[in-house]
Length: 269
Ligand SMILES: Nc1ncnc2c1ncn2[C@@H]1O[C@H](COP(=O)(O)OP(=O)(O)OP(=O)(O)O)[C@@H](O)[C@H]1O
Ligand SMILES: [Mg+2]
Image 1 (spheres, rainbow, N blue to C red):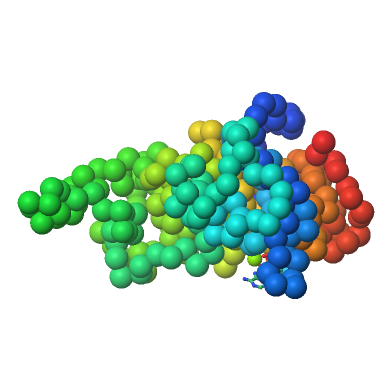
Image 2 (image 1 turned 120 degrees about the horizontal axis):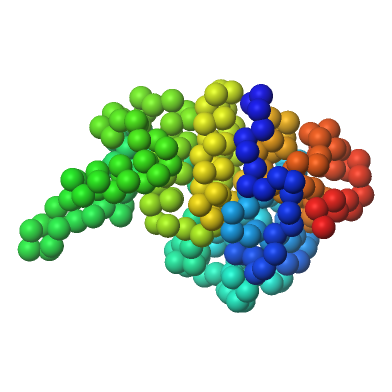
């Protein structure tokens, strides 16, 4: 990515008010493995927060706590200022949290509309055999894809025939359909070409500009994280090692913090 995808506010203005989601001092062990040793994150509406760290730092575990896949052992979890105990992914979804995992979980033989509504199809009444209301699904698909500036995408072509970037965007569109407040993306630009990654970065910014809070796990520090996000939380050994404002940091500084070059940096305060 050669250019900086326009950030929500420049110069950076620290977000005020109640965060959409706030996790404080989260701890989580798997048997004797302490995956999270006190991890924290705040995300405000309209903000793109990158979660970075070396392999095994605890990013996926942290994200899975946010999305209800794992229950945390101790720590505070608040949504819009209210303490919550998330019982599972459906509960997280009911609280407005949607996650797009790295494998995207798309069916390559199905088209965009079928993938968008997979398992949640709009159907007719039971006396009519609950037939899928394809026309209505298409209208809603067009609506959401149009909002995401993907109006030109084919609704009838199998998703397997689309580019990696288009597939990533379809997976994001699928989560947007349910009007989340917080979107969590796990490695959205991994294995994408330069231009496809740029397309995904633009979409992320468009959604943030609409008021969504976004958490992005990414190893793409130099091209994506420092250029396309607002804030960076660096994790090391299951806890926060550093925080940066993306517009004030270089990729080298972030990588240093990831591998342990700087102790307890907090440049985002
Ligand atoms: N279900 C599990 N059971 C046991 N240990 C686990 C489980 N999930 C994660 N861990 C351990 O917790 C630690 C953190 O793993 P996690 O997957 O959160 O790291 P990560 O930062 O996402 O790494 P990567 O960049 O490689 O994806 C690792 O030591 C990992 O082996
Ligand atoms: Mg991971």
